[in-house]
Length: 466
Image (cartoon, rainbow, N blue to C red; front, top):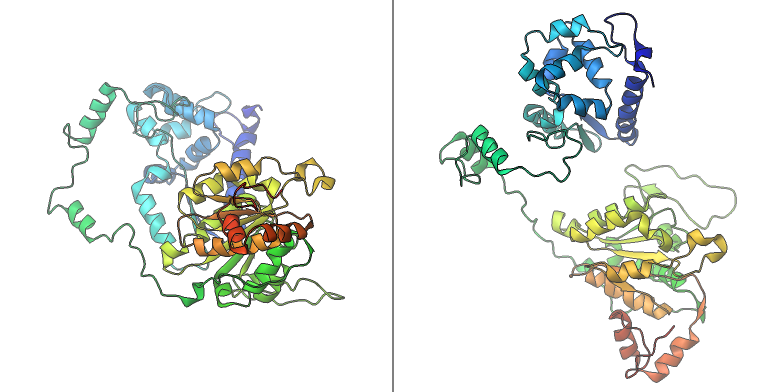
């Protein structure tokens, strides 16, 4: 684009199409959060620049800086002192803006670069004010959107090639001298009795584990004695098991989450009994004719519907899976999604596991059960993901009773070392094969093999059941 299109005559800096585009992009992020009920705090510029913006002609300086794309701004940060001043006071038409020139007249060339680099994310006073505002009373969550400069304070700050850059020994010595640190005292504590040491001594511990609450509701039964049809899919068994759990005390601690597939992953019975979570009660509307799902939303609901957002699903599962450590109260989160779309949320799943979150994921349908819907719904790589990921136990149940044993074992394990991921199939596999295995092996041995993730129905040969 031609930046000079925004010029309104000599010496006048207009926003121009680029500036309008950049402002629209920033507003989009802000409006996304506000539209979802968040309180938004923006830290675009630091205190020194904001003070300069408040002087006569300051809005022209703001327009100049905010009309720059990232590449131009980074180039400005890397400019020589005289070059930085020239770049700031030059209009898009290539002429000098006398208003901005007068505004910066009292700033030495050597200080112009540090002034234009004064972004909000590096202004400690602004950050503390933002935290104070965020900690005040509000009706919803809060987010701070802060601008920062990659490599800020280093010789290569703002350099687009600084991703893997390291300080040389000479640069380290220069930084040590600038900060007033003697060699070997980089990690020294503040002097006893100093204001800094006193402030730190009064600060609470970074994290104090809450007192754990004894809870008999977390007692998971050894079996549910649920009955299953002779022809039954493991996915149907999953729904039956949740329906039975919803009638038990442990069901009060189960939270289900779904990525837009609550009905197709057989959560209908659970939802009808436990309801859907919403921060405030919403009136229910009766549709014409009978409805299989009673979608009643209230703060007491125990199901969370996330829409087509597998990444958000794993983020939420990781958070719910840490309630034991963060609040002292243990919740038992179970998430459902389509198996082929596990890969959409892998980053969030990795971090949820690394953070120690404990949860169960029921992914359906496994294999090619949905092949009539096209290749996008076929699952061929998720078994490798489930097996290879650390801190996760992966199951491929073949029979309905296996699903019951695995799910109950998984719920017990949510307070142990490993979360579990269970893959379900929509295919109606015959349960007669399970009966055959029961004849060949004792039920206790079959159950032991199922929950230890070792398929097989014969104690010696470990013949696979599929």
